[in-house]
Image (cartoon, rainbow, N blue to C red; front, top):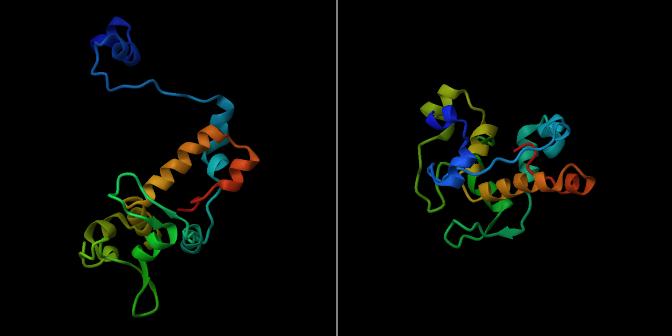
Length: 162
């Protein structure tokens, strides 16, 4: 507040050493870029959410997330680890972690899932994002700002519905 009253901003504070040094300068695009909206970068999601998410995770190309202790996985492996057909033939969310430890009895019946009114697609998305796939999602989204909205970038877009 004192810095604001004195007419300085967080970036000046960080550079001068007055602040904590934890701030970085924000980057802002043009008004035209803002008007493009999120769908201008990632596209519109498919109305058949579950099926689209499944298609988006069909790749068997392996990747190794830098923070996951040497894990080598793929989109399709992550999908199969989280989503399975139940005994009744319906899709369900796997309750085990990578090591086979049961995380909760049933994600879809978990108190917080019920309280929030989450769908299976939302729970699957949360499970995917809290695993190795988060790094691929983030790299993809960060790459969009550099690529802009050119046709080449649109061809390379993935995870639009996820």
